[in-house]
Length: 270
Length: 178
Image (cartoon, rainbow over all chains, first blue to last red; front, side, top):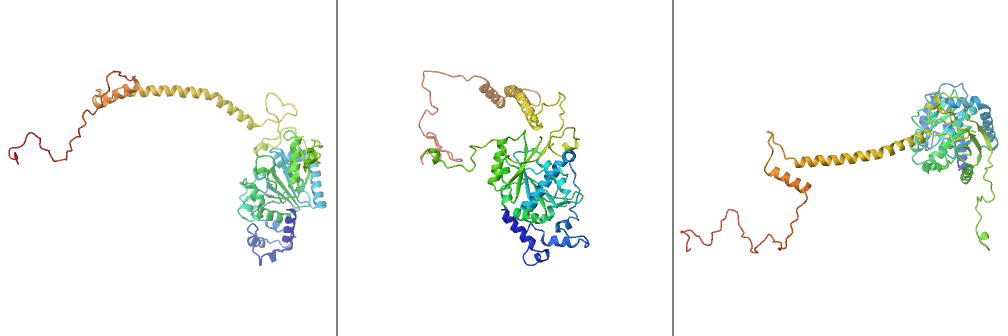
């Protein structure tokens, strides 16, 4: 699956925006003509062009994030640890070409979303384009944690064919991009097996340097046991008081069987 | 070939494996000691255990944090189990009382508008119903054979409407002998 993503990303990269408008019609989940019409309205020719997303985000999708005091307190207390983890991820990206990191856990409420948010703040201080994706298909919490109420989410992009540009939220002050889920997904297996999900991840992989997926817990219900595809590596968030070592072993085996290398553990509530 | 050689080796055999996972720990986040403002709770679920607000004191170290939902479910279950016998007894009491009220309504003769007690078919029906419902049935026992309702096997005469059959013995004079 990773090879397919990379091939799709290369195909997107080879296709310039002008060439893509002629000939093949755009896929339903890609912005296409509407995207180019909006992008043409941007009147800042002097600004260096980083990404079509960054141009578009200067418009209505730019917003300010409301960070939880808990995340700010964690950053204040243990900021250097998050900086080290951010260095580890960037090193993995540079050396092993890992871009998409899945943050998962064995059970719920192990501190997964809070850890991702604090890590995203550390990554946002680097000269990288970082994207936060809410991939907790059974219980999305990312938008709520950031004080967002998205009208269009990743679920609309994959299931209803909406443009991915409509779901992306840019926080220019925080130097972050958010792709939230608007609601829980009814069929996670079909959702992750769909071509729209693969194409969306391929395009995001091309546009961003680092993608952090706030994933579902692995052993909570049937729907959560579906492994995410289009992921380069996984980080297992572990709360010792909730999850035993056998569950960690089992999670490692499940990830290994799914072809997702486990980068390491993130211990919370130590 | 013994049974050990015949058994294929599992791809992830745990035979000689330690339970302790040997995964690399990327980060360790200790629990924040101190009070987080109440806004953090308003974001949703508190991700990290906050300060213990129980008046009895703090929980012992290493103990699993209690969940509010679990406590509420326990409380609701206790309330339900406490109220269940009371409601059962109350339902029994009211069902008996309603039966008594219905019996009183059946046995009481109906009152007319002018206040006199009703008689006739209605009152007799009420008495019959009340007596059949609330009085034991009288069983008559006799050695005589039970008589059937039909005594003779003669067929009943067919009578057409508007047509009178003449009697056998009495005839009118004008038609006599014709």
